[in-house]
Amino acid sequence: MSLRIILAGATGWVGRALVPALAAAPDLDLVAAISRSHAGTDLGGALGGGPSGVPVFAGIADALAIPADVLIDYTKPDVVKANSLAALKAGLAVVIGTSGLGSADFAELDIVAREQGLGVLAAGNFSITATLMKRFTLEAAKYVADVELIDYASAKKPDAPSGTARELAETLSALRQPATSRPVADVMGVPATRGGAFGEGDREVRVHALRMPSFTLAVESIFGAPDERLTIRHDAGSSAAPYVAGTLLAARRVGGWTGVRRGLDTLLD
Ligand SMILES: NC(=O)C1=CN([C@@H]2O[C@H](COP(=O)(O)OP(=O)(O)OC[C@H]3O[C@@H](n4cnc5c(N)ncnc54)[C@H](O)[C@@H]3O)[C@@H](O)[C@H]2O)C=CC1
Ligand SMILES: O=C(O)C1=N[C@H](C(=O)O)C[C@H](O)C1
Image (tube, rainbow, N blue to C red; front, side, top):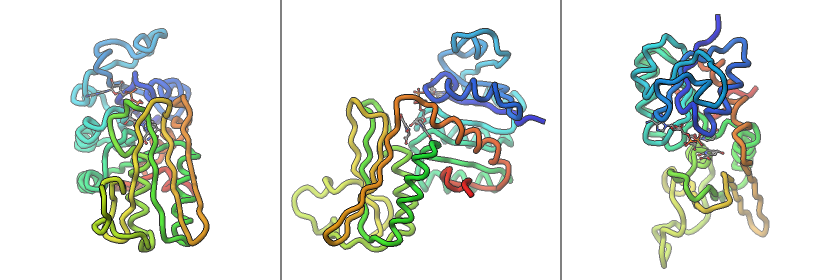
């Protein structure tokens, strides 16, 4: 039997790229969509095509009236947590693409997911090259103590840092070596210019976020060692195509565990 999917944010930039891929997947069945702007319509028509038989609802409560197995969420930072909690309580596993959540939010979701015996896969970035960038950064951190992140995104992006940078920073802070840079508490001038911190003490990871026209998203890990430097960088392009395969992989696999997993890298080999 096919996995029944509800897609929140179906008419958004990523959502509309997922719809044809879901339609083409014989093992996945898009049974309902959520889009406030097109509620009450058929998703095919809402996306400018012919009828698809997929109803569009204004919110998660209405969509959950349709029997389903997995919620895929690509909405907004202020909506994704409530959507995910509602889906888990209704018995759906959840794939989270939306940015804006951090480790405290995921701890909360993890409790509910375990109570329900369901899985959640949240990835700040479902593209393969961004996932490799995370993996290479974690590998480099075994050998080089000092690392900071730069997060570049569009002028209109509502959240900072990006989901990509936040997942990387929070993961890195749990395994990095102590920094040799001067503690921020001892910095003169304007300490805020040293960036936002994830983690504690000399293992915190500092993220410097830039928001301006011309960027979709780019994240750089910069490692500094005496008299040498390593930069590992991911640049997103202008289409949502790179996120599709990873999201569908997550939907197929998220029934295989209980609780929250973070990162597409947790599904690779
Ligand atoms: N994990 C990943 O690989 C990626 C994550 N993202 C993240 O995914 C999120 C969505 O990105 P885009 O598709 O570019 O955004 P978008 O703005 O194009 O689409 C968001 C969709 O959510 C809908 N929406 C907004 N409020 C809602 C509500 N209260 N209930 C239901 N639907 C609501 C909007 O109508 C819209 O259709 C962002 O947080 C973005 O950072 C984006 C690309 C890749
Ligand atoms: O908002 C975006 O556009 C993107 N957001 C994701 C994030 O927050 O990390 C990543 C994606 O490359 C684009």
